[in-house]
Image 1: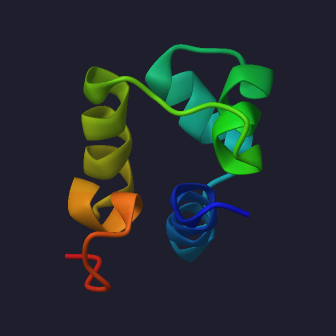
Image 2: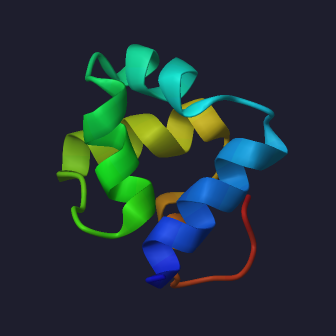
Length: 70
């Protein structure tokens, strides 16, 4: 799994959110969100920022630029 996908899944599970809950927050289908966690797609900048805000982590953490989530 690519670092972004791994960190996204880890951050979501730490918050105890389901994929469906995150997808609903992002106003997308659950399947579209699953592509992010599966590593087959990456979000655009606006969605990346929204994901980071919702999961309370930094975009640098999600992108693998730092190991510190906050």
